Amino acid sequence: MSQACSIVEDLLPLYKNEALQANTVKFIEQHIACCEHCQQLAYSQPAPKPSIPFKQTLSFFHVIFIVLSFMFALNSSLLGNHLGFVVSYALFGCLTYLFYKNSWIVFTISFIPVFVWAIIDNVMNPLYIAKTSLSDIGTLLLGATFIAILHTIFALLGSAIAIILRKFFR
Image (spheres, rainbow, N blue to C red):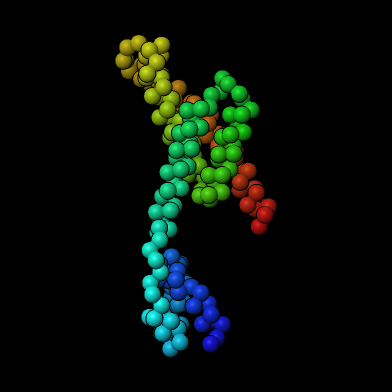
């Protein structure tokens, strides 16, 4: 039994769950094609118990980050604790970047919920919109965009911190 056999044996459960990258799958299939021992292992081992597919797990975490983003949007205010607001959004942006490794996702998850929240909050407040005119709607959208951009700036600063941390610890 070679070292490749040991590696293939360890990877077989992941192979059967289709949780490997294409290059690893190719390696395993090439090895199984020419190794009788590993062929027997591959066909004799029972299929692993069904588990939550990796993509569904990621979807679960996507939902959690979006819910957290809405919670931050609802609970943060520039009129309240300035330092708490800045730190919480920077931390949120940092964690989101470390999880997704994509600044566009940080932008989207920090901008859209705040934008939607600002519109809903102001539409429900009779002090802001007394009548529905094009001018009022434009002002509402401009104000919501401004608030969302402010939140997003701090999230992107957190994202920048995460980028620096990743480069530092590599």
